[in-house]
Image (cartoon, rainbow, N blue to C red; front, side, top):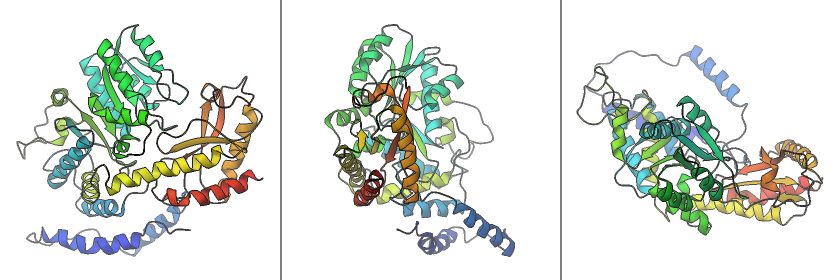
Length: 451
């Protein structure tokens, strides 16, 4: 089994960098600070022992939830910045890291073809989506927000917080928003915003953004793209044509959310929100006479609903993007393509094996399947049993409740009558090295399928 992230190597890299950083403050008089004494070391030893009670998220045999280890450069850059602990709310709280954030966010915007925009990092996708829908609500107060029934559950919750009506739109047989259902609802009026999800967290489904944009021409609503999970796939060149078309159209959206702490190789939490129309910054204006006094330049707190935000997150993202630029055909993009390649390879093994039931092929790097059974109840029981058995073989999967309506086109031989959903197995093959481990993963599933 592979070793966990080499934190000792991180430490070897960090020590001289901390010394280099300290040279920038060499003119200051010495001051005493808190040190790691014997008592503190005991606490830290206990902390390390407690943290052993975790799944091996760093390992390719962890193929369950959306947990992708940060790049070593991101880890070291984060720790380096934490020695200062900058706050990117105001320039005097994080002067260097604020500049790094602006440069890193420019890289994200450029990935979608935007040179003019308003954007910043957030603590995660939930806050980023909240800001996008908050701006949408400011522009069209009281109008409803529509999202696919497979959209992230937080959109409904965020809309409730913002006092905006929220409605779900039916999905098609691949878990994508049904444009027919969307058009029917739009004819009823009262819709201010449609959330297009490019990479649902359940199935990795990509909503048909070009069709949604055509409906915008007719009905005049705002389009928000939630690409928290899938956004970086804009760089990949091994997508299906329909999926590729949706990613190519992202630049036509009004706002975009993408999470660097998912596919962007960053520690939690690091999300981002981008607005095509920079003038929406007017909604953020507020008075803070004790905060924004150090410079006439834009302070990031002036375009964010959040106040204190970790400058270390900006430093880590900036460093990672310097090492791995967000270019089609580059190393970062090729690693994304390996993730999708792994999902396609494992899906093909499952699809060709009569002991397993599959549905739609993965659009990105998430796959769902179940052990064959005669009924919904039998498949659900077998999925739960195989989930537990796989963990005993150090293969960590996830479980998902899939609506029966989504499985009917694929599982005609399974008695699904009377059931609302079926418990299935789910994998997020988000690590590039998953491609090298498909054989090992399949070996375990093959053994489990043999009983």
